[in-house]
Length: 166
Image 1 (cartoon, one colour):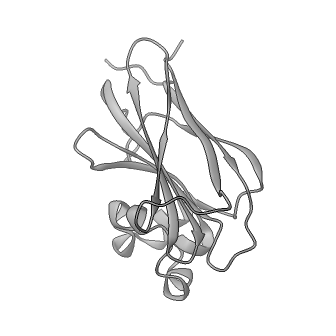
Image 2 (cartoon, one colour; image 1 turned 45 degrees about the vertical axis):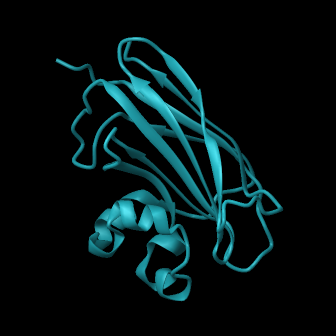
């Protein structure tokens, strides 16, 4: 039986931006087929239906992956939180799926999407192996639209570490 207590720690540096439609962030895990395993965090404003109506361009990749439109208010409340403070952010995935069941060993993707300003956004993607031994990885950014880097930077130094249960 797969042990409980496995964790993946996702870290990144967040810089607050004073721009219209910025500072919205979503963090989630996908399996090897690109299917959502679990959302780790999403900012309240973006995840709540009222905010989505005001700024529908916020984190569209996560919105689609999470099927946000069909999530209940309770499900949204369980994953959402206040806009994060600037500096190093540390989030932990308990290696369970949305139903709380432990995931099997294997390769997973972690994604961190952030809105820089209105439609300008970045999605950081990294792979992490969940198994018997500890592993680490660094994620790589894709800036959109047109894959061009915009300034200033909202998210940087995105990485993950898998720690097996003791």
